[in-house]
Each structure stands twice: as C-alpha cells, then as structure tokens.
Length: 545
Ligand code: SGN
Ligand code: CA
Image (cartoon, rainbow, N blue to C red; front, side, top):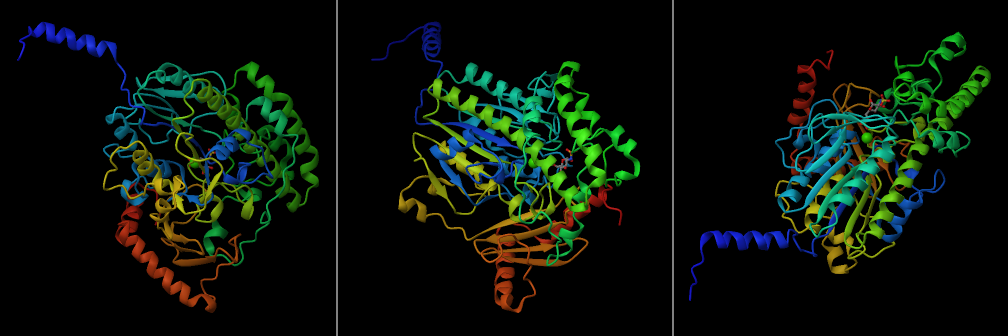
C-alpha cells in the first residue's frame, strides 16, 4: 500500500533525518595527514642517519610505521615535485617543469578527488605554485617561497594575512586549529601540512639559533670533492659551499662587517643585495633582540678568525654555519610534529589516520662540497618517506623497493578506495604496505625515471634525464652539452667515478641506454618534448643564445 504523504511533510521528515545525522558514517575510510617539509635531506633524520641530528618525533613515525629507504623524486626541485605529487604524473606531462611557470590548474589533482569522494580537505603552509590549490575546503598558503619570520599567508578568501611568529610553529597552529574544528565528526579528512623549513635562507627560531650555533657537526666524506671523474655538469654547478654560499644571506655575517673587512673577504659569487636584512627586518624589535646576541657572537668570530683561515678552514667554517642553521630549522619541525602526533593520540585519531612524512626532494649537506639539490645524484634524488597507519600497517618495517613521489597520489587514492585516474603514471604502493607475501609480489619495478629542466637558472645545474636501477645510475646531460654519466651504485655509492667510458661497462651501457629509451617511451617523454621545454625558455627570454 502506498501512503500518500503531503509534500511538505515529506520534505520536513527529510530535513529532520539529515539534521539528525550530518555525518558520513564510514569508518572504513582512513583519514590522511600528508606532511611535507621543503628540502629536508634524509641525512638529517635520525631514523635514517643519526650522526647529525636527533629527530625523535619523525623517528617515532618510522618506528610505528614503514620507512622507505629508496624513495626518490622524478625531478629534484620544489614546484615540479609538488606538481608530480598532486597529479601523479611526470614533469613533462603536468608541465610544471621548473619553479618559474605557474601550475596549469585545469589538471586534476588528488585533493580534488578526495573532496569529490566526500572527504573534508585542507592545506596549510607552502605550495609554491604561483596560484591557489584546488580541491581544498580551506587553505592558508605561503606566497611563493614564504618567510620564516612573521610570514604572510594567502587565505581561502584570497586575502593575504601576516601572522606574527615563526613559520614552522604557525603552520602547525593552523593545522591543529583545523583538526580541532573539523576532525571531530565522522567525515574522513585529507589534510596537507606543508612546512617551509628547512628551505633556504635558513632562519631558525631565535632559541634554536642560540642552541645550534654552539654545536659542531661531522663532515661528509666528499666535502672536498674536486669533481674529477665526473662530467662538466658537476664542475659548473654553482652550489659549492666555499664559492657560492653567501656570507650575509647564508652565514648571517652583517653586510657592513663584510664591507669593513675589505680585501680580507673575497667577493662572494652571487651575494644577494638584501640577503641578510631582508629576512632580519621582518622581525619586530623584540624578536630582533632575541637574535642579536647570537648574531653578535658569530660576527665577532668571523671578524677575528676569517682572515687567518686557509681555504680548507673556510670551507669547514661555512659547512658548520650551514649545518647549524639548517638543522636548527629541522629541530623545530620535529618539535612541532610532536605536538601534532600528541593531538592525534589524545583525540583518538591516530588509529585510523594515515600519516605520511616526506620532503619535496633531498638536499646536499656538504656532500660533494655542495648545498642545494637538482642533480640525479643520491642526496637530492632520494627523499625521506615514512608512512604510518596503526589500524592496518605493522610498525617497524623497512621497505627497500624503489618508490617515487609519482606514486603518492595513486597510493592515497587507493587506500581511501577512490578510483585512480587512468592517466596517472605512478603506482599505488599498497602491495608494499601490508606484510602479505602475495601482495608484495605484485610489485614489480626495476628502475625509475628522472628528468631535471631548470637551466640556465640559479645554481646552474644542467638539464638531464636518466634512469636509476638498484645497481646503476645512467644520466644524459643535454642542451648545451651532450654528456652521459654512469655510476655503479654498489661499487661507488658516493658517485664519484663516472664509468661511462670504462670498457668493463660497455655491455651495461648498451643495455641501460635501451632501457632508458623504453622508459621514455612508456612515460611519454621524448626528444621533441625536451626541445619544446627549451623553446619555452627561449620564448620567455630565459635563454641568451
Ligand atoms: C631559492 C633559493 C635557491 C633554491 C631555489 C629553489 N635561494 O631561489 O637556493 O635553489 O629557491 O628552491 S634563496 O633566495 O631562497 O636563498 S625550491 O625548493 O623552491 O626549489
Ligand atoms: Ca624544495
């Protein structure tokens, strides 16, 4: 029997029903907390290497989850890596080849798919796309590279607001505030918590600055690399600590002291006009007073000691100053991660929240005498990756398979049971996350593909593409050179002997060049696209020839 109810009554009952249960009760859907820092080298996480810094909270994640020892990026630079993470595609397809051109927002990014699937979504911190994110209900993002001290944020309403304090603390406050407001019902969430730290220029919080400038750090074995046995790219790159690290911008020597010391300080390549006072003058007078004693101490030391130093001692001094500030900014990341993990515990969210910790790429911490990234060589090619999900993933696991930032989007969609778009090029890491043997066998990948474009540009790392397998690394540097490099990863983990012309490797070279050509085809990269992106530089006036 059909009972005819008046329309208004039906509407009223519907509203009553909706009003009583505003939540999507779906406990099978995990929450996602995607945490990414900017330029965080795995060498600076004690779960990976414990000689530089203790990071107890990141280590806790590794202990309670999975630590990937061969996670890498497809292009070791900020915005291209972020675009790969969001689209699940290689650089040449999503088109964000470097930090210069804005991201094409007509493309599908994974937060949009989470939102469509009923997730609450938000993003706080650094995006670096030249435009705002799509698919997030709420965001506060740093304009461009952002600032450490009293940073500005672009908000969902497209306003810019300045928040007083230290960026890492503030981005965490925003994240916790959102969790408190939005994560209390049963609607699953996908939250992106994205630090500026430890990106250059390395401004620690004043207390960490005072603390870390008292420390001395061990030097890497290749600090005094002379780049013999490499191609021209390593020799011409501008990221050497002695030659290219700036006195004021990086080491925090006041410009007036450098001027006063005259010939005692060799002119530094690329010294920034406002490198020191730009960031420093963002601080209030009270904040500056907290930095002053440490700045005074460093400057006094520089004034008396620098003129007496040999080049080797200068290199060492610059390395120590670099590590002190870089690692101090990471110490703040780790403290703040502790706040977030405690909140997840206290609010009962830990169990069904997938927490990912990664960086947009790795970084040189003095290896090869360098800072910065960009190269396919391990320290910048690899990136930290830790995944924790207490409900489903066993703790204390280490995965050695080669995975990439290309895989993050398909993985997260897969774990949240959202369909993975067919044109995403990454693979879900699901078979590697659960201990069942059967599943693990479904994972088969014997090499990963890499392509770097931003040249000519800051740090002058030449364009190159290549493949990395468990045993070898093959790279082709092109545009203004045509050079190949091959490294035997097992025999030469420091990557200081290019064996491309060694007769013992003739067969390997033939085989790997074929494999690389196949990979380029499979991923839809090509010489035509290489040329297209060179032409794009030419059209925009970035090339002189
Ligand atoms: C800035 C840095 C460079 C760095 C690029 C790219 N200089 O230009 O050292 O390589 O960003 O970094 S500084 O003015 O910030 O000191 S990325 O992480 O955005 O790719
Ligand atoms: Ca970066």
